[in-house]
Image (cartoon, helix red, strand yellow):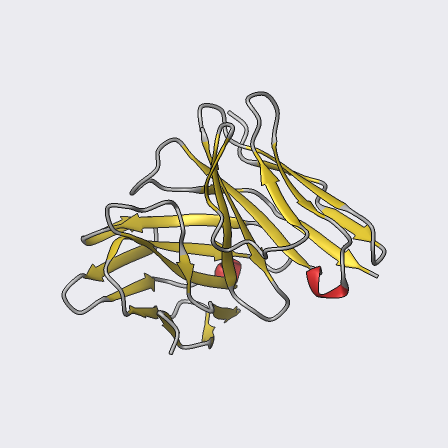
Length: 114
Length: 111
């Protein structure tokens, strides 16, 4: 049973381009969470999704960021028109249930905007 | 004031020493997580606990709900334990997986 898979591990984008980060949850997990870790800062919650539904996006910036978790395929975190301040490590976690369940984290995608 | 505070922020120890990392939180929680992150690496979940104490190998985690405090202990520390240790809390009955994280404790164990 493979763990949470994120790709790419490293992503370099020029300012103004789009970044797409992918997360495949563990087999049997239907809950996905995205977190961001800015340089020299702690992790911050961004969004919580179930299959085809966004449950809580209170941590997502209002503009340029979107997330989806389609019925088939990985969860996607999309950042449009990236700026230097988007440079960070983006982690995905998955769990089989909503509450009081251990979450399993991916290796993260390190986004660098140049 | 952060909702989740860890101490110390940085910790250097000699191999074999007993290590304690503390976490205090200011909100009611459903569960507390201890995570480990190696430099440039992913995040590994060490413990999830809502009461009492858990042990896994040389690692021990305790939580006191009344005092809103948790500790992570490492016995017989080893250089491979060098990493950032992060405390995170999840919320009550409406938990959406929205964890709040501490700033992390950077541990270096010297041989």
